[in-house]
Structure formats: structure tokens, C-alpha cells
Image 1 (cartoon, rainbow, N blue to C red):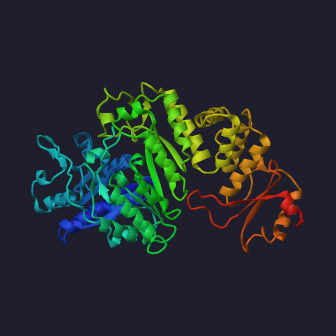
Image 2 (image 1 turned 60 degrees about the horizontal axis):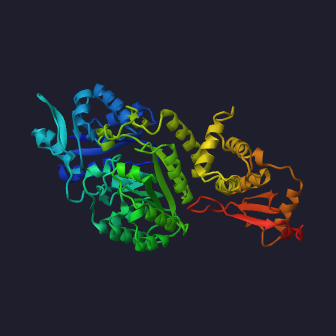
Image 3 (image 1 turned 180 degrees about the horizontal axis):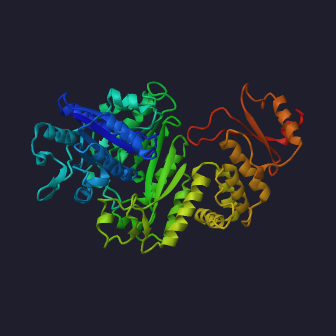
Length: 567
């Protein structure tokens, strides 16, 4: 029997762990006569190309992993597959079908069966049922059509550790892309907007196996390794052991430049784990912390218990050493959160000064309580993936549109890392709150003929024009702050037109830097120099290596007095 396990990723840089987990199950529980291969693609490539790779294997069974980012493409692909191979067995799994099996089987006749829950054992059991012509009803977690309707099975949630997906074929296919690692499954929380709480309480895999897999993935050529544990620090002792292990082996068995990404709950960190994170080598770890909201009524409504004061304290403690990239999340569209409360959440989150502050928009996923209980969580949302909320009793469609525009502006200004000095200065000089600044720019931008400003230079000009309209902002200081931001974040060293000042003395100052042995550029190093008119001096950047956490190149400041004697 020939089997294809197909996964469509959102981008090429992302790999997919699910089909490799299923392949491991086939190898563990099926005889050699069952031969399975993984076929990966992306949602952005022509479907015909993916279909051709699947057909080349001449499969009798094809399994698809479905998620919000690929379900539309998967449904279209399997219809084409059915036309080409009328006798093939098509089975679906993943969160996009697990909680609506009856609906999918009724509306998508090309689908033969749906697996819910963990699939390493159950997919293999399905193949054995096909091979031995035994009843499908014996396969745990399998839903399928019958003569009397649809047989619906509960998700299969085993207690034992799954078989390892890390086979030779996996590493051959990885090719330096983002790698994923599970060291646990399930979640200790039951947030109303999330599916993780429906996957059983958290269970943790063998610690020594997790350590071994960390080393194997670190040696694979992947530069980013994401742990998909829903709350990495749910077990503090285990989290401490794994972070300490990374620190101990970094620069040895783990090459410098490899970065591990964890999702954590910020309010349950203890002093011991905070101290452990503070010792992590710079750039070795990224942390993602889901705040969601600072509105206590909102958090209570979605069944999320958070000690907000402790959360803020812990995030500041994590950020203070500046050795870890800190990413925090807010969600727009949650119950009881209007523009005012969201703005307050945003301003409090911004004050923490994370490396990235993502504000996403609520999505009502199949299987999530917020979708299944509309009376308790009233809102309208798109019926097409990703099922984003379009209005709530507290946010109108116009409000959400405004927030989308603000998000885009914020991503380009703050999350890009390109204008940090600029925004620090403008917030201090204008007295505006962060939300007022970014939403104000977003609204102003919509009125400008050049609002698209797709290139970085054009966007810099657009932002400069807006910021000079704000009360308290000095045009000369603003220009200098933007120059510093540009030199530290763009290794071309070329300033955009809006920041250039024709000044013949710049050539003389460049020569003075070269003549001074303390400021002479290292051999074969590209350097950019600019005059700071508000600070009576020079700034220069040598483009050697960016900071592994911020991505910035170091800036050097020299007063005119220091350079005079080297003219």
C-alpha cells in the first residue's frame, strides 16, 4: 500500500511537523508493505505543482493536515485529486476538521474519513483497517460516512509519549527551514478563544528525549527552532532544566546563531526561572507571551486567569538584561473591550518596551467556546478562514477597520525595529500616548495621496511629514533621531532624500574620523557617517554584525570638538 502524507505550509520557510509524526506512526505500527512518504508544499505555489508531486507517488491513500492558513487550498486540492484518482482514500486531520467532522463529511463528498485527536497511532490503525478489510468503527478518533448517516468519533487522546518524528527523511527535507519541537501536549488553561484546552490537560514527554531532540535540531542547519508546547513553563522544574540545558550547551553542541522560540505564561514565572533566563546567551532564545488584554473583565469573560501586576513585573525582569527577544501579544475583539479599554491595554503593553508587540484580531475557530456559544460571546465574524471577528457589541466594523490601519502603521514603525529612537523622542516631545500616536498617524496617512508608500524611503518621508505636524516636535531633532534609526537598522548606510542635508563639511569630518586612530574604521568595513545638527556632532555606523536580539548595528557618537584636531 502506498500512502502520501500531504501538508501545505503558509510559506516555504516553515516546515510542518504533523506529517512526519504520522509517518513515524506508520513506521511504528504498520508492516513494511505499507510505504508512506511526505509531500510538502505551500499555499502560495500553483496547486497543480503540488498535485503533480502527489500523483507521482501513485498513492492508494492520501492524508491532509488542515489548519486555518491552508484549509481552503486543501479542499480545492483534494477535489482535483479525486478527479485524477477516483479510487484513492482521502483522510483529513487537524484543527480545521476535527471539530466539524459531520459538516465536512456531509458537504465534501471527496473526503472519506476524518481523524480527530492525536494521529500517530490512529492513522496507522486506519491503514491497517484498509489493509485487513476490518471495520473502520474499530479505529479510535475516526469519523466517516455510513449507510445510516455519519459515524462521529471522539478525539483520540492517548497517555503515552508519541513516537519520534525525527527520521532521516525529516532532516533531509528540512533544508534549514524553521524546525518545530514538541516536548509536551495539551494545555493547563481553557481560554474561550483557543483550542489548546480541548486537547487534554498538559502531559510532558520524557525530559532526556527532549534534550536529545534539542541537540539534533540544533545540528540540523535550522536557525530557528520553535517549541510548540502551548505553555512551555507550565512545569517550572522542567522549563528550568531545558533552558539551563540550552545555556550549558550553547556555543558548543549548539552553534551560535541558533535560536529557540518558546511560548510562555508570563505571570507564573518564578524568581528561579527568571534568573535562568537572565543567564541565557544573547540571541539564543525568543519568548512569546500572550497578554491578550489588560482588562480584567475581559480576561474573566474568556476564562483566562492572569495576575496582571506579576505579569508586568516579570516581563520587565525578562527584558532588563536585553539578552532575549521578547514578543508579547494583544487581541482586538474580545468581550467587553472597546476602543478605550483596548487603547489602555495597548499603552500598558507598550510601556513594557518589548522587542515586538503584536496586536492580532480575534478569530472564532471551529471547536472554540467563543464560536460554539454565541449567546455568551455575541459577535459577527467572517465565515471564511481565518474566521476573523468583524464586529462585537463593543467594537463596530469601523472601529475594527481603524484598528487594522493602526496595526499596519505600528508594524511598520515599531515592530519593524526601524524607528525606535524616533518614537521615543516624539512620545516625549508631543506628550501623546502610544495608541494616540500610532492611530493618529494611521488616520492621517489615509488622507495622503502617497499613503501606500511601499518602499522604506517613501514611508520614512511620509512618517517624517506627519511627525512634524505634532505640537512640541522639533524638526531638526526629529531629523537627527530618524538619521540614527536609519543608520543603525539599514546596512546600506544610504539616507533617504527627506533626511539628507547638503553639507560640504561632511567630507572633511569623514577624513577626520579616518585620521583619528580611535575612530578609524576596521579594514574592509563599510561605514556610514552623518552630521547631527541638534547635537553638535557626528554619528557613524560600522556594518560588521547586528545585535542578535534587536537586529541593530551599534552607533558611535563623536562631538565636533573631538574631531577638530584631526582635520
